[in-house]
Length: 78
Image (cartoon, rainbow, N blue to C red; front, side, top):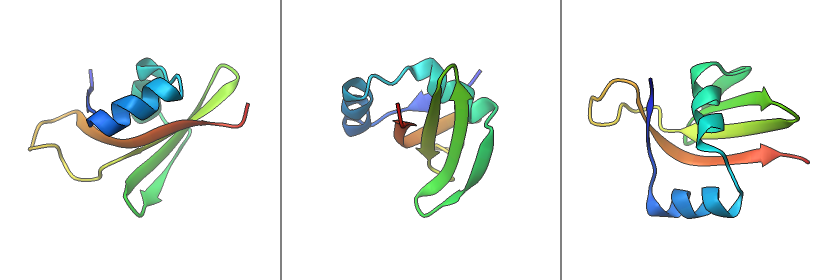
């Protein structure tokens, strides 16, 4: 099981965008697409009728395994 670290800013954006935390975890665990990003690692996953994009830090969170620092997340299109 993975753990997410969310800053207050990210928490606010996820709330505003109505992002499901489970969708973030699923995108990280089994992405449809994964590639480097300027800020870390970008993953995308189609879940239901939505595509979620998640960017997380490529650095380990204080050497804790399976812990990801989320930079941003959003759904593509509608």
